[in-house]
Image 1 (cartoon, rainbow, N blue to C red):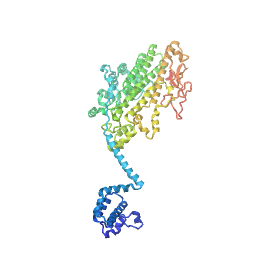
Image 2: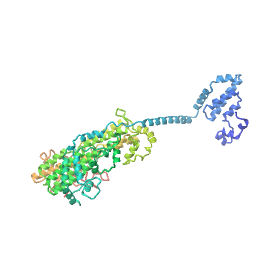
Image 3: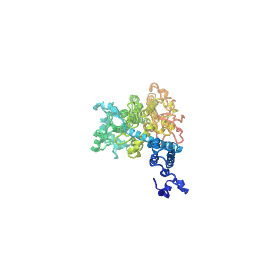
Image 4: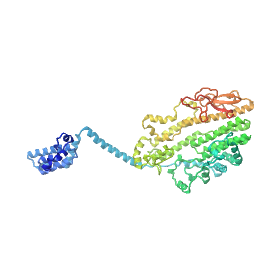
Length: 625
């Protein structure tokens, strides 16, 4: 019990008064529930019971004062009615239970705002706890790398007997010619690494001398190109290449670095990290053969020029051996050297090749047609490999995002590395394990599951494979596959993240389709050019129309791959010219409009987003004159 002196003190009255009462100058301490009990003059046992109930009720001070007043009045009424303190206590019951019941009843009567706040934070705390538990649970999930896709792809190369492989011959010839991919010196070898070399270039004389000095090596390159299989085994580790390979590729590593790479496990060997340095060497080989074909043509050596062109087709086939889209595109680029060389030779040295050689070139070009679907299948395999490394596996083709995607990186560090081009795994706030763990539940709610991600990628890839076999003019008005991401963003604010990995890894199949149109049209041009030359040799004049070429020199005359209409043809200054009218569909009489890089494409779009005003020439022997 408080003493009379302390109960009357100003500080006590201020302490137990509402703030608004103090501001009004009326500190009456009416919220001092202990003083209320003391003032009731109850017997000690009853006063103690009231004190226990009020103190344990966990109520506001005003509510405690009200409860103290009510209980004191209850017991005072009982005493006045003649009941004993013992009887009142027995009837009152357990003070602990009474405290809980009274506290619960008072809290239910509190304002709605308090109720919302109280139960709101309790709900939020519960959800936060559940979220943290989910994060901890998801942090335990690990990807299961079940399939070694690279090993599967390499089985074909490994099955080729060592003596039948083309790659060792390519490597030996290139090393004998002084090629090193880290070569920056002013030499013919360095020139071929950097760019194409053709007659008329400043160093053409030096180049022809280089070819003369390395005739044996060039013959070895042609021999390598004639082999059916390349037999190069790509890897994700530099340590898996031979010492001679590393010498050619300019790979310089210490024994310690190579030993560390040998210790990489399957979990660290992502298919998209596969090293394909052979493609660059094959590109150098193609530049050498194309330049040597020009040299041979200039020297009147049709047999060597012919051998160089046919070798280019073999090099192109080798570039496509591993079914990656990049390899297929390199193969196409190498074939463009062959197409351009044929055009240049027929333009400048029309009598160099025999009729038989022209026929053979047409058949060899048809037999070496680029298999674009092979490259698309490689993209699919690469995506499958990535998904097994970023998702868990529930055994039924589905799973959730995994936090740890390698021994060095979590999922978010890997994504940051991809976005930054060259990885800086620590360059993200989510490199912190705790923050990354707390982000996982949200990421799994927003990003599609493994099964959904694979289904979305397969759907688009299937559509791409179907489209590349269709004529371009039938697809011009269809919705581009590249609209997929924009469509997902329209569906919800987080739509762009729903199929995150599809957006990151799906190639631009619409641009690929344009590349295919360009390649096939150029190939049509070469077929027509060879047929025109054969017709001219027999009749000593050019045909009146392309229709005269079929069926003796062509099975059928190809159509304009942009419009589906017949190609346009005319003779200018005794040179045949075959052209497509391009996207604008308007015949500009064969007038081409080169782009900045000198290439004219049917889909070239100027700043006003209209098709370029001009035609697309696919064949003329006047090109290099």
